[in-house]
Length: 358
Image 1 (cartoon, rainbow, N blue to C red):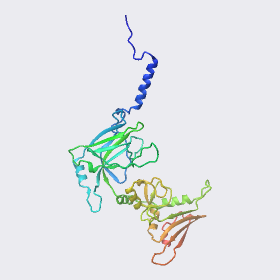
Image 2: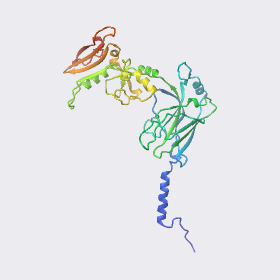
Image 3: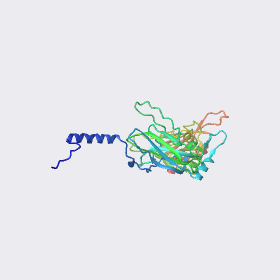
Image 4: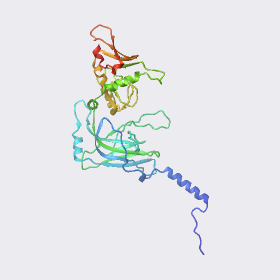
């Protein structure tokens, strides 16, 4: 007589409970390794102070391997004979200068996101060892929010000092981090050439100046009558003192993405970001990336005139009134005075070389 085998779950309620438990357990497990691409199409945001010479380790996913919260991963990279020689011979041994390499091995972390360029982003509770040596990372920024883990500043990590400068030996990077079920992370290692603020300033000058017509058009736009706006701008005042160093500007620049006329000194701005990269405009505090910086050609000669302290632009009817405050030489006992220039709008131009009228 045929006997039907006993089922694992003889009652529907038992089957439903087992299925729910399995689904809950699966939600608590990390994503499977095959759901992470080995080399995702991640693009790191370019860092102005570093030129990338070679990719030593292409962006690689940090793949969870277990159900534990803390995960571990190991990555390897090699140097070519030429790369090892270039790094070793690039050590800066000048007196009074920090003993560092100009050509560096740079490690970066970011979110596993391919829709746009990614900024540096460290995984939570990350610990890195390079060739079994603990790698120093940027100190976490303290937070007053309860339950929020402090984050590390978004910066690259220079691991040159811990790298084996030999083409015959593999370099090992061991990473441990806390799993975040809502996002993934990637790591990359590159050979870079470190630049200085002077290098970036020279590149900015080589790029050329913003044509004077652009500044004139911007001035006219700000002082033009707008019938749809109840409040009209009738006067603009531009200081020739850098808002960063409170000193006279030598290379006036501003970001092409900013709408204001006020400039800041390019050299001071680059030096500030060399020490602590923020890339925010000192005038409006909006992002002012290096690639968007332009030298103001319309006022370059004006900033060279030591006597002028500020410039004021005012519109009266069809006339442009340009005023500047002139400060006499400190050796001469005299009070500051003002000069005025009137330009007719029909001329389709605004005089920018105000130093000639003084």
